[in-house]
Length: 366
Ligand SMILES: Cc1ncc(COP(=O)(O)O)c(C=O)c1O
Image 1 (cartoon, rainbow, N blue to C red):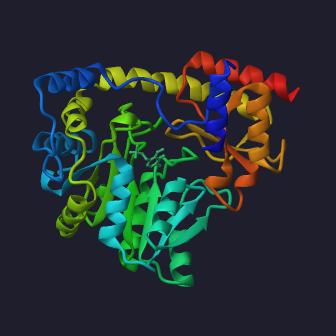
Image 2: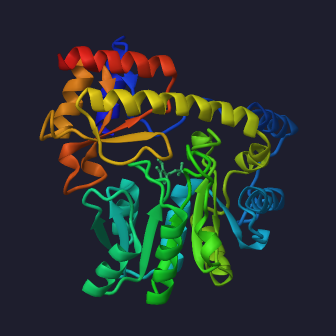
């Protein structure tokens, strides 16, 4: 966020900053989504909804599981949330008690750690030490060292873009089940996988909590709308916590989001641009000295080992921004231990911006 703030103030001064720091699509929400919102707004009153969401959206999400994954998920197990960020709060509050040990991977999305700490959970960061993703072995070892209550992982992941292959995902979910560890699977980057099909943790058991969102593939970050798929026994507890914390997700966004599942032609065109950007970064970043620290399987991130260039990624990111006017994210927040030698580049921007950014970085490094 510090780098983003500096990038914004440079932009305000008129400098042509290219941001590869933000984890959000540069495209607007699909036209049909915006049209539905415009109509709802014109029709008048926008109010509270049922806490778990409007019936039409819960039904649309249920259908999405059938069409996209071949899974039958009843709408009654779906909770619509104010982005996946709210879903994390709800899941942690409904599933855990203060002091419970919950594992996450390092590197990982910083808000996991921050929200858990705010709620008094004991965060167990499992260092991946060069491995691409969290596996059943990591989970067993951490549980043997001191028992875990839960595990949270994302595939594709932020910041690495790594995807857990189906067999390993099955082993991870089944091992957690055998050890009595509750599973939360963050599937926010589904539909942004560049080879192979999406596999949901729900394929390996109904006793997992899945969190997803309209923010990434659906280009709806600012609409603050996401969802959870819950085991039956958690539906009522989540509903009760959500009633007090949020009342409901914004009705306007819920009405609009129903249309998102029908906008795949438009959204796949956006994804094709990410794919083009990905090809470019995969080739050019290592040539410039940014070794890839993880395979760029999904999402829209390249996570790089910058130890050939610096041993302080924060300072490096600041200088790159000030001198080359390219913003990227230093690794420290993703990984407090090893993040001083990593950086994350987002390729959600335009292709021209990616080309220019790489040219600037090359020139700057020379
Ligand atoms: C892995 C991951 N999960 C969740 C989120 C939060 O997304 P939202 O609250 O917009 O759904 C992000 C945002 O960058 C993310 O990278």
